[in-house]
Image (tube, rainbow, N blue to C red; front, side, top):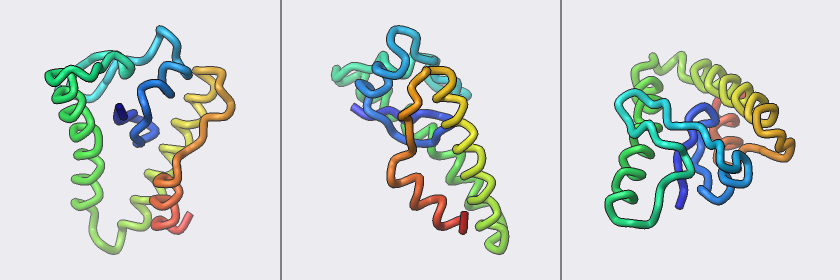
Length: 116
């Protein structure tokens, strides 16, 4: 199961997050969402539905923000987003002590679109 991780703006396998955080995973801080630890979702149907809602609520504000951006400013938006994500990754490595945490390939694609 993959969960959207705010900050780094990527979906990560729950087992991977458990390896990073152990029993101290952060809770979802998305407004109006689940407020659950990111590693607490199970394969039960109701839980999988809550995870799906969490995952959409995670990406939706980013997509809305990008769409609201004037077309001529979208590269700049992507650059700024990339910088926020890179900062979040650096903070995550410090927080967890896991220096090997790196963005997935999808993050590199987004970064490339911004010309960074």
